Length: 499
Image (cartoon, rainbow, N blue to C red; front, side, top):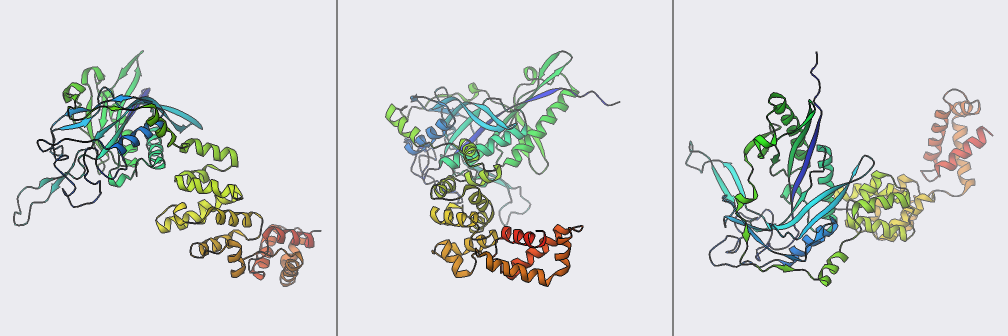
């Protein structure tokens, strides 16, 4: 007899580190450059040498406030800096400059798509801090020392890079919701231009906190909270949470004392190769970090004028823009996803509509040949450099039946290198559809005469006569070299064969 299933509810919150898109580090003038020679982008400040003084990067602070505004956070007018003390080889000073009791923003929310609507996810805080360096483990022994153990190298190029840490409330109820939140946040930060958000460069890292509320025998049990450290892909985020949910459920099933008040909080690592989490250590509490105010940095005071300027730089957000485009133009979800994936492309789409584009046709062209050309060029649709007026003209020509979709794709390819108008390209390449019904009727007569058996099937409405109609329609299109409007061809064939 199968065991009775255990009712449980996942409780998931996220800590997300977003690398801000600045040219230099948070407290020094060292450039932020991915892939540079190890330890080549460092200075006495980010190395934590004695006697140096940090200076705040104003641009990093402004980008952080812009993202906090987009996350509907309360913006603190007075914020200070704190030292978070811990020892690790990639932390040169043995402390990290962060924000503790007065973060620059708090108490916000971010809406994500869920169950056909929007679900608000609480934002506890979003604060600025500097990144640590990078440890590279398990390197082979140097040449000539075979048989010796491997070693760990430390690259401090990343030390001091500006991070915005976003801490959500435990409002996420599944690995899928966490995945959606993470992908929507990545879209938001790139849309605002506050971060490149490239996962492969470590520009977004996720640390989910996971536990379960288990209802059993008339009471609720809360399993220990596991913080899964440094996940750098959406796939790992989803898989790690799914695994941890099932692991905690199994641990509790074996021992009902596997609960938060008895075990506490733990840090875990994710073994992507093995598909499992591994407990690393008991999680530190705030007092373990010995926070105290940073004596070398003055607090930041944000006045009304400065805040108003930063609020004015935050545009309509992607999720609101998506809904507006769908409602205003009746676009399908797949089309709007492509259009709003890049802010400049969304702006270009709306500019083309304002220039006379047929929205539905243009949206179809965006998700078909314009996306294809953008992907091939390693850029966005806006990055192709096609002016809004030319996009509008091609979509209108297609919607009006002056060119068919196949011809439109051919014209689009020419538009990448030919600055002529789509109409001129269509004429030069012979891609315009015939609008002369007499000329099209001649092609129809030829096709009927050449295919008497198919014509008879249509006249008699024989079985599969519609297939015969499609065959004749294709023959007319071949004879006209694609210049006959398909709908007109169909109508003329039916008029002649089924009057």
